[in-house]
Amino acid sequence: MTSQRAVERGASVLIDAGSLTRCRHRLYLDTAYSALLRQEPENPGVRQRREAARAQREDIRSRLSETLDGWTEIEAPDARTASELTMAACRRRVPWIWNAVLPIERTTGRRGRSEILMLDPVDGGYIPIIVVNHKVTDPGRGARTSRLTEWAPAVDETRKVRSQLRDQLRLAHLYRMLDFEGIASPNAHGGAIGYRAECILVHDLTTVFDEYDARFLDRLSVARGESFTVPSQVSECRSCPWWTDCRPQLVANRDVSLVASGMRADALREQGVSTIDELADFSGPEPDNWPFGSFTDAVAAATAWRAGVPLLRRTDEVTVHRADVEVDVDMESYQEHGAYMWGTLLTEKGGPPAQYRGFVTWDPLPTVDEGRSFAEFWAWLMGKRADAAARGKTFAAYCYSRAAEDKWLLDSARRFGDISGVPTEAEIREFIDSEQWVDIYQAVSDQFICPNGKGLKKIAPVAGFEWRDAEAGGEASMGWYREAVGYDAEPDTTQRERLLVYNEDDVRATKVLREWMSDRAEIEIPTLESLRSAV
Image 1 (cartoon, rainbow, N blue to C red):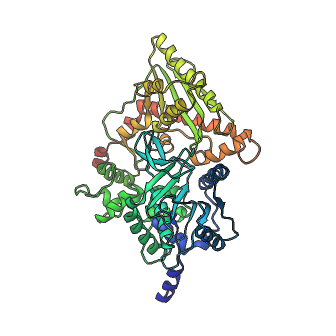
Image 2: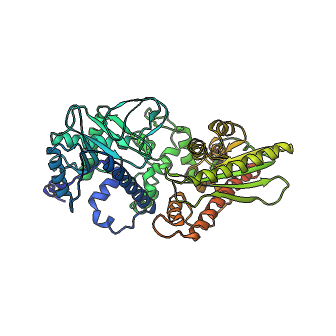
Image 3: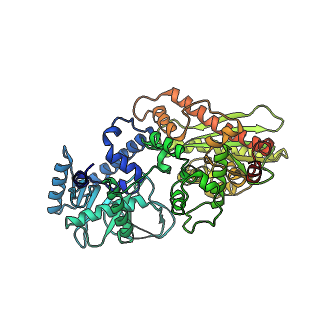
């Protein structure tokens, strides 16, 4: 490409706020090879999140349009017409503008749209408000919020901010565009309406402008082909259409991001460490800008990857809490809508073969029937606990990565407290804070170094477990659930059975992994010292 062509191409490149948190190399590929991208099928998980976000926006539009005075909606066949209609509404000082499209800025490279533009009732000018399908607050205090139907920011004694940098960056992007047109509120505020739409979370955008401006200039340079990028593994890779092209390059180059992804790889490259072999042989101090996690573990993971070893032991002995009566638990949820299934696997020492039981609602979430199924699960689990105690038996319940289970246990108690059989939040906390609630993920983290990741589907196969469904996974199960409950068509009972099998395999996987840790892990998995001495 000639320099003149590069200038012409760069001048035509426009980016939106989504580019600011996207992988830099993906942004380059999306821009430079967009024609190829159109031929790729959309990732199912991405499609499901997009459809859920659309449903959330429609719900908010419907609610607000019925209650707000001065409400107008922008409907147009193309972006240019939509932006003209938006600006015309702004000139008329319409109080609430839905589906606002701002004029593209060819000189700066910005494009963007806001679910809502709200006229500042005090200082004039417009405030961008976005509608998102994730939580923007948590129980707590200190967030600044406003009611949905008016702009009156105040400190909220019931909510704290749930950090969402992508929301802040998007709002900063929109504010810059409003300011470019001379119609921004002077207060530099933005708002976010999140899942459940209980309030508008108010953001002070002055706190994020510096980061926004730096990111925007960097991403615009990447999109214009002015900054060089290379593949590097990040969390986004698993849903990226370019991953099938990038991963072979990373493996061929033995790229360090395969064992130390994201910001850790960036920190290592700044130290001149770009390959797994260089990291495995590294003998210097921990980099000053090492972002998170154990640097020593990263070096060990590189050593294991180079040797083709799936795990390394941290300790001479591998231990895991065991009991006479053991229950494996796995919860299935759908986005932030609720937990529709609690799967259990009951095993008793010297008793019959392990027995699976799923507690489930097939009413589409959100539904009050979720409370009924949760109450049945809790009564069953506490019944097994009490029965073991009455017989003088020890009891333990197991999960893999307790954060999700803990979240939905506590959330279910809060949401369904008026349903018979649903425990109080205090009862939930008593159980999950006890030694009888065991996180196998934590036991794995404490005793193994895992170069390929610590997810259950990465670790359980090392113990000899395989899922019956070759497509089993969190993203796939979201699609199965939509079909099972009939979000888009008639309910598909075969997908219900598929979800039950998937859930049963998850709890059986934790059982197999626990037993392997007790019986064979010390023999089959080397320590870092023994691996190095064998070389």
